[in-house]
Amino acid sequence: MKVISIKSIGNPKTLQIQNIAKPHIHNDFDVLVNIKAAGVNPIDSKLRSGVYPLTKFPAILGCDGSGIVEEIGPKVTKVKKGDAVYFFHGGLDGIQGNYAEYKVLNQRFLAHKPESLTFVEAAAAPLVLITAWEALFDHAQLTKNKTIFI
Image (cartoon, rainbow, N blue to C red; front, side, top):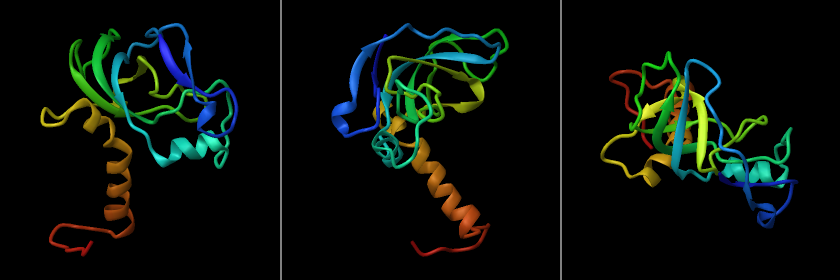
């Protein structure tokens, strides 16, 4: 499969198209996703440029993704083959990111893609939504009947 990877810290020119083996399911709860879109976040450029250290090279960046479930492990109950999904997983700590044609991840990291979103829109959402949730509920302590001016 084709991936976009980096072999060292550097500027955007370090991003390279590379061919690697297609991943396979290894655990009962794993899902193989054919990636249709990958999100690009500030964390990706910070990892590529060395602001945050990477532990393994070559590295495939990209924390957010969306795609179609191609295969499921024997104990997967959350999704089925052919489902459209989106997710936040990988791109850090030596875990394959989503700048790739395929991705294997545990079903707990997946959600069904809302029908109202394109794959591109869905791939742009996970980290942004997590950040907004943390800001509103963890830091601003938003609760029912509480108003916050944004």
